[in-house]
Each structure stands twice: as structure tokens, then as C-alpha cells.
Image (tube, rainbow, N blue to C red; front, side, top):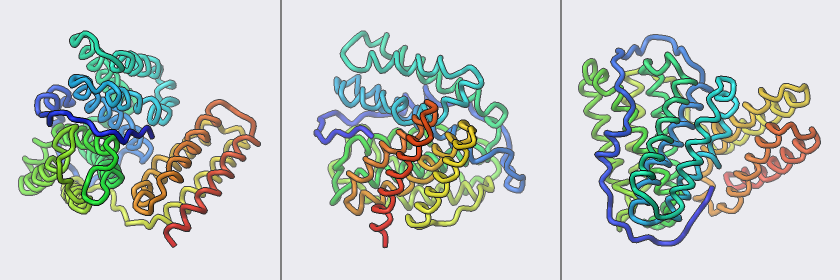
Amino acid sequence: MFRFTQKVSIPILLFTATLAACAPTPIASTPNPTASPRFSDEEVSHLVALDKMEGHLRVSLPLWEVGNYELATTHSIHPVAELFSLVEDELKAKQADTSLRTALDAYTLLASEAGDVAQVKAAHQAALDAIRAAEQSLAGSLMSDNTFHGEVIRGLLEGVEEEYGEAIREGQVAEIVEYQDALGFFLTARARYETIAASVKASHAHEHEEIEEYFGQLEKALPGVTPPAAAVAPSEVEVAVDGIVHELSEVLGLEAQTAETPVEIIAQIREKIEHALMEYKEGKNDEAYELAAGAYLDGFEHIEAAMMEKGAEELMTTLETQFKDLRDGIKAGKPLADIQQVASEINANLDKAEALFK
């Protein structure tokens, strides 16, 4: 993850117009809490990754507009550097990978310096459009399933909670990039909720009001790309996130999730890595890649904030890099011994991470 510790002086920006302009087309389907899910965790994870790409772009453009090209570029790079590999194979199978990467790269090139406003905004919109097209390619008919949207919103809000927790220290925003990550994920989660809000309101008016109230609380914590002077406590953000997820679960019948400790999550990460090595040894590279990606996206990302609280930022960053090396190595078809070496290094550092929580 790219980090900058410099302070920026930027007027607090209003996002209402941007949110409306970038919001996906509303969905009219009726919530059905009793229906069995018609989608997999993997399909949800892919949409969460694409929506996080959108979140990064949502904060990049306002930063470019006020002349902060360094942070604008940081957030424009994140979709490719951190997330693209998680969906690349699936998009490639549908011949949709090239257009997305091209659009993201084109915007990043312009975001790095001053330029023509209309040209930059057009490139930004083209990148957003490419993300939407990729979502349609991967999800298809699921885009009309409210429960599917609810699960994606939950994934985004988990990202809000994690990034915000990493950003705050002693009542102040210490990591502005992580704060802005949380802001971008929040804006995208709220926009996705707007696609199902009318349907939720029609059948569950009270729950809809509660969800809107909790979103309002998150907006107070994340008012714009410039953080407030006094930061809202991470515990308040956690309460708002939990409140939204609870109400969505009541309305849409989201899959129940039990709270897991960091030690339990680390154990699951190890299992996925071991399974990935087995699949890779048997020549099942695609399966190995999905497992390696899941170890990071569905596992390690959920303990990053806890590691930050323990003062283990350097270890966390090292592990992030090693997980990427593992995915990239599998994708590149490197020798088994090389993949095993990276996995061994990850496990050694997971030992250190596990010791933090015992």
C-alpha cells in the first residue's frame, strides 16, 4: 500500500454531485430474505474489488482538481497496483481485461500533473465506465439481485472500517491515504445502496431510515478528502458499519457471519496458502491463484487494522508485498520452488503476526 505522511491543505469538498453522477443505475427488484443465495463468495469478492477501484477514483479526481497531484496519482495507481490482479483472470476469460486496464492507465497518466480539465474528467469518467462494464461482465444477472448488492456493500463497509482504523491515532488522522481510502469505499458503498434504496424503502421503511441514519454518521466521520480537525473515534465508525450491515441483514437475509479472532483468520490464511501450493504442484494454476488471492482479500485484509493497532505497520507492509509476490508468481508460472519459498516467507511472518495476538 502506498503511504504519504505529508499534511495537505485542501478545502473540504462536497461529493453530492459526484455521487449522483457516478451512481450505478437503480435496481427495482424486491428484497427476498428467504431465498437461497444465487451467487458465490468469489463473485462477491470480485465486485468488491471493482467497487474499491471506483472508490480510489472517487477521491483521486477531487485531489487533482485542487492541485494535489501526488495524492491524486497515489489513488489512481491503487486500482492497478492493489486490486486489478484479483479480477484479471476472470476478466480475461470474458475478454474484458484490456479495456479496463487501458482506461485506468490512461487516467493515471493524466492525474500525475496539471492539464486540461475536460480531458482529465473525460478520462476519469472513461475509467469509471470501464469498471461498470467489468462489473457487468463478471456479475451479469446478479446486478439485479438486491441480496448480492447487500453483500457487496458489506464488503465495502468492512474496507471502510479497516482503512479508517489504520488512519487514526490518538484522535487524529495520522495516515491520510488510508483515511481517503475509507472515504472512497464509503462513497461507493453509499452509491451502491442507492441502487436498491427505493426497493428497500418500499418494503422496509423503518430499516431504510436506520440505514440512512448510519450512512449519515459515516459521512460525518468522512466529510471530504481533507480530514476534520478532530477525528471521529474508530469505534463510532465501527458502530455505524455494524448498524448498516445489521439492517441489511434483516431486510435482505445476508449470510450470517461469526466474529473471528486474528489468530483464527491467520489459521485460515495458512490453509489457503497450503491448498494453493497443492493446486499449483498439480498444475492447476488458476485454482492456485484464486486461493492465493483469497488468502489476501478474504483473510489478511481483515487483520491489517488490528496489526496497525499493535504497532506492526512494517510487518503488515512486508506481508502485503509478499502476498502480491505469491499471486504474481503463480500468475507468471514461476517454478514451484520459487512459489514455495515465497509461501515459506509469508508463513514465517504470519508467525510474527500471530504472536502479536497471543
